[in-house]
Amino acid sequence: MVAKRSGAQSKRARPGELPRPVQEPRNEPPLSLERIVVTAVELLDAQGIDGLTMRRLAERLGSGVMSLYWHVDNKEDVFDLALDKVLEYRGAPEATEPQEWRAEVIHVLEDWRTSMLRHPWSASLLPRRALGPNILGRLELLSRTLSEAGVADADLNVAIWSLWNHVMGSTITRASFELSDDDKAAAQQRLTGLSERYPTIERSRLLLDSDWDGTFRQGLDFLLDGLAPRQ
Amino acid sequence: MVAKRSGAQSKRARPGELPRPVQEPRNEPPLSLERIVVTAVELLDAQGIDGLTMRRLAERLGSGVMSLYWHVDNKEDVFDLALDKVLEYRGAPEATEPQEWRAEVIHVLEDWRTSMLRHPWSASLLPRRALGPNILGRLELLSRTLSEAGVADADLNVAIWSLWNHVMGSTITRASFELSDDDKAAAQQRLTGLSERYPTIERSRLLLDSDWDGTFRQGLDFLLDGLAPRQ
DNA sequence: ACCTGAACACCGTTCAAGT
DNA sequence: ACCTGAACACCGTTCAAGT
Image (cartoon, rainbow over all chains, first blue to last red; front, side, top):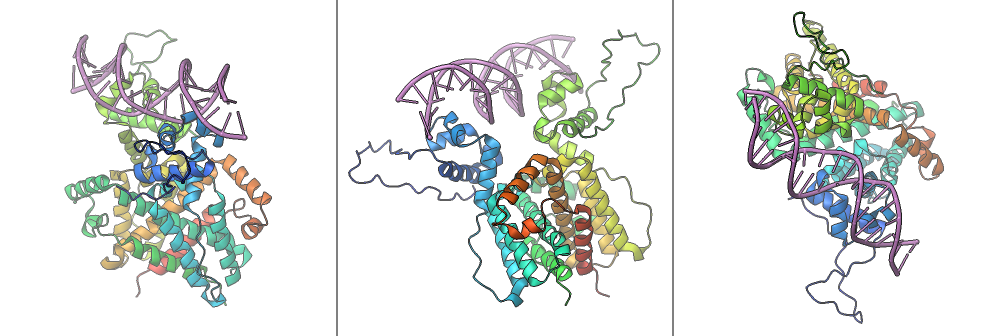
């Protein structure tokens, strides 16, 4: 269903290595935290949040279940690591002018949202998990940008959380509506069945015609208008 | 830990009924969807999201586990029902002037947020669950208020989703930071340990001094400024 | 330092049956 | 119409042990 990431690309057996029979090419490299996390992300992408199981994860890695526990404390740990993995920041488009703080903030936040939408499970996971280094890094970047743009220290935290809330809210909403076609159909049914009870949202086709990207951009613009440093 | 709802108040045995021995007062009323939902909310309040178990739920209800399945399709169903239960709308403060649309919208959204914060599990659950009648009712109310205030039909869906996203984002963020003192402590530790890597958010004490209510109100004001119908 | 299997205490749900 | 227990196919994790 959902696109899988390439993850650990299957290396050809190096020449000179003893050749394994073709039908059993599981030339598994040794377990490592990195491999575990990459595979966990693959599994989450493929099977969703309930699809991640220590047993299934071990199977994919070609190891015993309990081997995982040497590298990882528990399942929560795996979630934290997978989440942070997905939020690696692949660098901004280099030194923008200080004038363009607004464009830079928009870039940072859209990249954030895009990263999460590539892995829909991440959106609903983030609010419940610890903040890993990549998440903190993104917060730091956002913070610095706003600060340099002239937002007063006293207003900084409110500004950051407002933007964070907007990113989280719109990403989670979008991801959840994207994921559950059943729910959507059920909601539509319930709505048209009860259109006398919910006439307004039925008329506006709230649950059916929604421009998520447009909503994100417009809400962001409103927030930035409000947050912009007075000059 | 978390306040429990009163739920089904324990009725005294009606006079004329055969008296049960005092030490076994489990004069359980018959199972019903209502009792199941109320008890599920109690259990979620007390034990959190992972604390809700069909077996524990049945135990609290004094019934066999499988009895639940006559009233309910599966566990997901229980989540949907508990979530919607928590979002019952206890009426607005009666017919406000049409001029006061802004106050009314703020009231609706703050009540929404308050309801969810009373049951912190609801915030992280809502994005993944189907929309029940109470949730739809709140959307309808919001929709009607905005429409009557003069928001054009073409802008209505964007307006509603922007506000919804803001409520969800800020409630989820707040609930998650409220819940996990451990994570907070860990984050603080990680931060102060690595203050050279995250200097800006360390300086602003982003993770420690946050005025969630203020952030909610201010972000809401910015959004309403932007969404307000041009006149 | 790294990996393992057996075992434990749980899950949600199917099924066939009881009243 | 409503409730039940036994059974199945799973879970995450402890533990004692292997290399």
